[in-house]
Length: 411
Image (cartoon, rainbow, N blue to C red; front, side, top):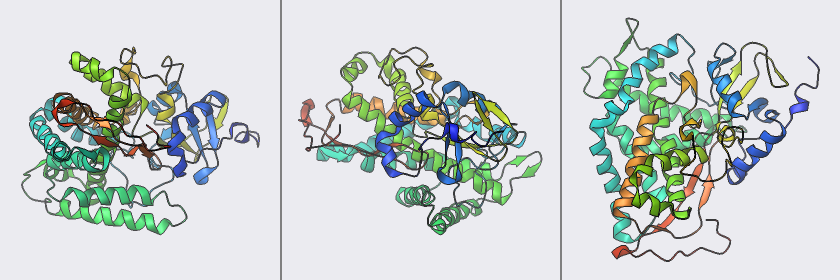
């Protein structure tokens, strides 16, 4: 291999840079057009796969692209693997078989009434006051309450949310790695308490069932139980927070979309899928090259990190016509990669869709006059993207509120 095999594909992509949030998908699209398999020197160096077909191919080839060396760029300060996200076959399949049956649409059916109640309670202050920040005051608490209700965790949502946010923010600070390790230790200590309270006791909730489960005749080890619970708690709420915020943003800003949904509720699933395609809450995950391979004209070597850029794949013009346009009538809506692809496809996609549908139906039924009330703020961590602020107003009596945008505000 020549010395310039990386330099020929060099791009300026640093997912630790906070400013990237405001220009993320445009930046990825520009790189995709110029260099579909790109090399970045950030975070020790990594390849970025930007085309839909390449991401699908790599996701399916675990023998070439392994998850066992971590799924985040840069790596986190956690002390154990995230399970089953950082397991290859055959162990991965055993854990997936353990968890997935609890998150199918059928299994989630009995929880729908509870989720609707949580959503209604979350919106109650908005209706009373007439305004709120929908992200900070609604989207943040609701998914935490939902996943904790399903798992059986009774701790207050603010503690869990703050531990998860601190964990995600800290590991991006590569100049102070001790901060990431400390944040991971605090989150792990909290979850370890919840696990210890259920170990060896008759299961009274889903968390108890999982931590006392057996795989191939053996009970989960402490490391495996902690890695599994961390995935369910952290991934089970942070991504949905972003999904709710961007879905409501599109509802309030896309011309005629709300009227179409109010007239035809069969469009609700299409609304959810198009929002997920345009705004994937998780826009990248990592793999590590296990054996030499070539993608397009790029030569990848063992040990090199690879970023699967779902956010670029979802805007690939070879897969989606006019990919930046919002289109409820788009064919192939469910072919986006927001939930990943292959054996590591998101375990919680059914729950995410249920929560998004519940929120959207509540808004259409109860708050049809919801309007923007100021500039929105985009943000993210190293692999996430979404709104950090979404100010809204609700006019009592069904009359739309007057939108007041501050000078220079972005809506």
